[in-house]
Length: 111
Image (cartoon, rainbow, N blue to C red; front, side, top):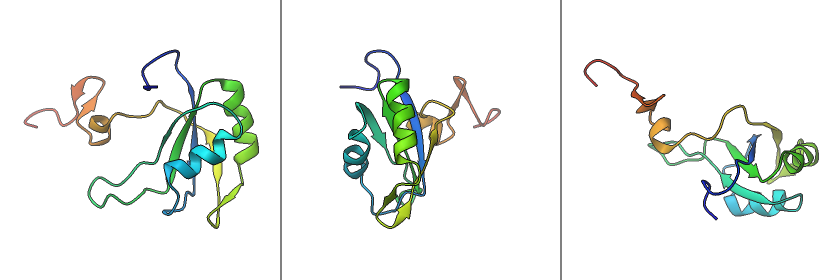
């Protein structure tokens, strides 16, 4: 199912993610708790190395709350995860590159 179908989900920010962890690892671990809609591990644009955090999206606030309680301080691949509610919706690749902010070019002027 695509991200833009259906009502918006509830995203968790997962910090202290090992560079060895895959989206499948997170999908399996967090999927024990509820309906995981999406897992995203941001990567550095140039090096393509993971940035050390991830987003896990659940279908409902209740599942996300339960997952936060269950998975906060959970150890995966030698690292203790920190799980909190994400403050914003996930950015698009263009937003991550700084090209789009509120529909305008971020650089302004001569871009």
